[in-house]
Image 1 (cartoon, rainbow, N blue to C red):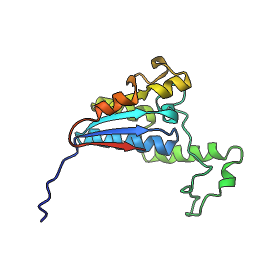
Image 2: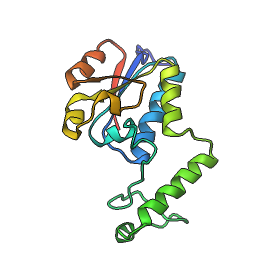
Image 3: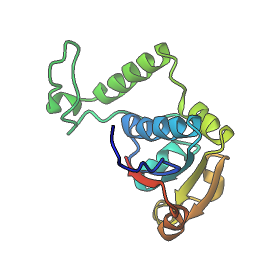
Image 4: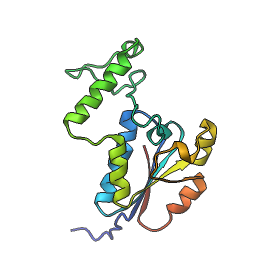
Length: 167
């Protein structure tokens, strides 16, 4: 039995900076898990992660086939990077990934967002990245609370029992 004092996790502030299926879903799963555990959750999208909350892009996410050392072929064989550069391969791999997720009843991006916000989680967009990509609030998923600076995001991360997670 340990005499260590435990500090329960009270709040997570998750940053999603990449727009691939695997990166976006990592952020969505962690945020939804926090909400389901009763942990306050803030989800901040920046740079290419903005694709996940941009109305025109959020349902068109793809998986990365080039330069992804963890990519595997059926049977666990490494996925040759050169193969990923061939026309149509990324689209095919992305379709297979989405099909597998559908079979496992994993929610679509928009459904995950609904679950997160319905449970009290909040979704934000990065002001600098939105300016860089010419995005306005009207371009974003309706449940995005606001477009904020990183300083404002850090202000939300105050308090004991808070973790910032970068995906």
